[in-house]
Length: 469
Image (cartoon, rainbow, N blue to C red):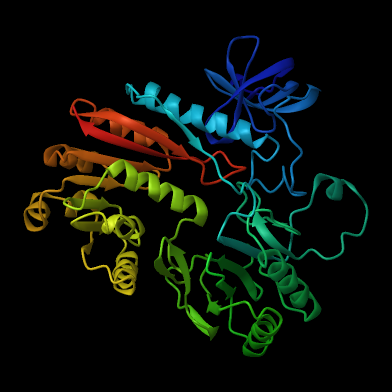
């Protein structure tokens, strides 16, 4: 066995910190960093490595000698297997501490940014049942626990309706209760599974591409709307109607009941026809009097309450007086653009996804907002000198890019335009820090505020205000 993959064991190792992607950090006797996935800072453990690199090990704790005082009892029975809530065993106040620390470290170590006094991270009032969208997968060969594999017992029903095991595209963990989406989500999922079993519906087999039931998406909103979308692998009209009628009759609170017949290899729905069975083909979300129409393919922030807080911080950082031309880059469905429009002279939104811009225009019309315009295009191509000449020199730029951050050409164009203020919203403070460093000679960070959109996970949003030096 090569030295690179040779397994090693270390005893009585203290877990020192939390790092990126939910990993915790310890130090090996040889000075290398150890990345762990099943511990909390403050634990003292024995570890078994499964990967060795020049500067670090990846390992798993095998024996716990001391449990950290930062620990709490996970609410969910599926914790540790599901992988969706990697920090559920850490007290929420400690989750917030490590999220704030990660943002600060990224801005200073990656971006080499001089920071102002840091505003404390904004935690969520609801650390559970906060998601407005969940997607569940059907499988005819559910994930088995180690105890089940080792037992000689009859495992009985192998069908599952739940989540993918992390890193395993064809393994589904059957979920009894998820603590991320409020009712009626759990009731709908469990009822659908039981009805499918009682009526001999075939659950999907990803490897063999067989079965009938593929996925189920549930969307809820602050207005009380509920959307359910069932994805079938093939058309079986009798069974399809049987299941959809069951849902309609037993869950009258469903305002949008839809289905998809998807015969292709993967279960992405963005190239599929979504057919409305009962109710509307959309639901509504509401925020500060604004209504946003959401269909099955729409992007909308999955934590509605914290999205409201995030947008208020963004608008506050922009400090609009009503006289400004604002550019909203990576505008998506135009939520931020419409949220700030009443305090701006005009807002220009740019986004690469045509369907998103269609939705943005529709929502602006729905909200009677007349001082916004939306344009489709790849940011690094459309956001050029000709675009600025046509639409005006912005006073403020708001940018909310994907996890990869902004393309360097986009950063350079922002520097060329040189607006008075830039508000940078990010779901990845590491790439945000990289971009901030590129702008550091012209702009100074004057405000920064982290927002916890996803309690029980390691993800965190950050908003930064840049002003000219």
